[in-house]
Length: 251
Image (cartoon, rainbow, N blue to C red; front, side):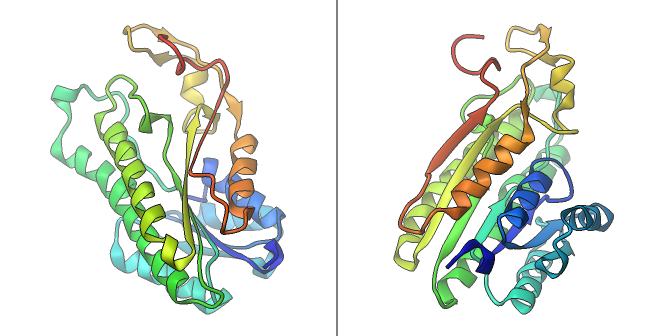
């Protein structure tokens, strides 16, 4: 099946990495359902793509089962199947001391980053299992935080470590249905959300330093590459990062 016949869902596609990935997949010929909380931003992504009927804006709260079910039902109604899920939507609680972290803030991050990932992956898995031709690919957005924390980031880091376990479980359980599951771990892509890092971000030693950034297009192209592989090939984990960010080594 060529990319021009394939269907993708991208969560968190109103801005940042999700928007860039959605545009890259549309450019490659996919039909793409855009999912995110803000309808206006999804419509802006759709308009920017110029893809016409190949793009669908579907406001979605990934932390709500009924909202996720509606997303996948409307995608199936419009396009008949799903070949790729880029499970990208995420939330953060930056700069909160561990001892000051509230239950409500912890839960809000878990609801989106982990429960939301699970709900979307499960919905995609069910469709991929039953459709003809069978199978598909789920790409989870992990983050560099799936490997190492930043200071004061317990909720985000814990959920991203958990995403790695989810990725491995789906990859194993999906084999018998031709469902491949990958994870992309991203370090310092330049988006509105991450722009603060280019002006200074807290380091492990407590100092604040400017960090190197990379063009978000490089991430989008990586997602499109992973998505386009035949289902008998899988990039299990990809780390893509600004070469000079303080991740490898001791600072």
